Length: 110
Image (spheres, rainbow, N blue to C red):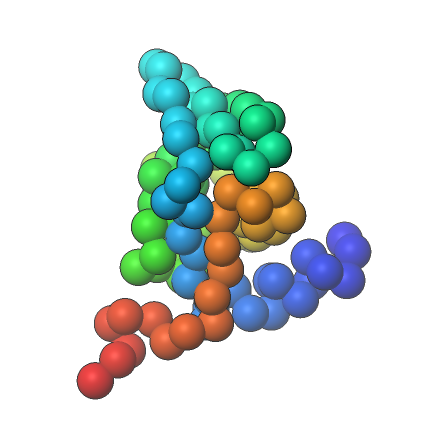
C-alpha cells in the first residue's frame, strides 16, 4: 500500500466524500458510467463502485460509506471493503470526479 493511500485510510473517519456535481453519469443495471466534463473521459464503475458512487453525497465519511457497502456485501471482509472504498475515493479524486473534505461530519455540527 502506498503512502498516499495510507494517508487517506488514516483520515477516513474524518473525511466526507462527494461527487463533483458537474460530472454526468449514465446508469445501467450493474454499472455506472461517469463522464469527466473537463477531460471528456468516461469512467465505468461496477455494481460495488456504483453503490459507493451513490453513497458519496457529501453527508457520509469515507469510513461510513465503506461500512454501508460492507453491510450490503456481508461475505466480503470489511477491512478489504474499507481499503477498496478508500482506493476508489482516491482514484476518483485524482480523476477530478469527486472531492474529499476534512470538514466536520454534518451529524457532528452544532
